[in-house]
Image 1 (cartoon, one colour):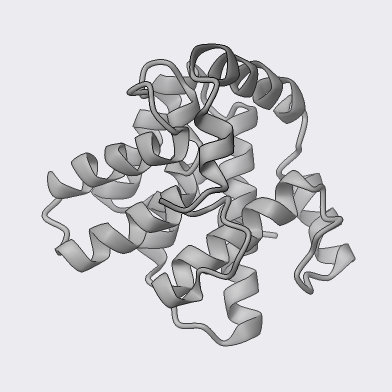
Image 2 (cartoon, one colour):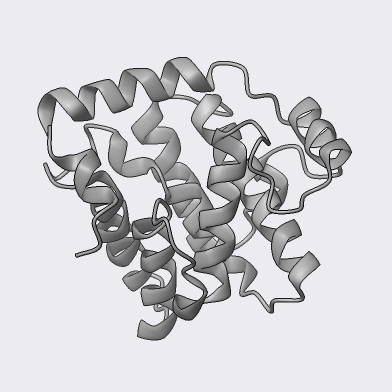
Length: 189
């Protein structure tokens, strides 16, 4: 596994700005959430490769970085955290001159990453991110065909250390401050 952090992967201005936004929201460089986002990005690319899906890797990288950013108070608009993250993606990518179609795919990937059903009709990046997030959060129990050895190597290179505590803290905060946010994630608007 060659890529161990986003410094190697985030090469475009949009990717670097998304990474800066995540680091500002979390208050950490290479913290648990950033490592989760990196594992999700790498898993999503691997899942797409195995399925021979064509990806826009810049969309996938930005969406992977921003997919959980709406959990953090500095980004939250008081709504469903996935929609808050998607709104941030739209604002950020507009400043980079992205075409509306690309912005929509990226925002959909952020907003739909907890959907229960396939999101392939919204774009390969959307579905790959959805699958990869579930694979990572489940610790590889839900693998969508990823090889166990590959997942073990990834988690060795990009450790899960601290992710459970970070998610518990931020999801707990979201439940206290926005009690309807989590049920609404699973109900498509």
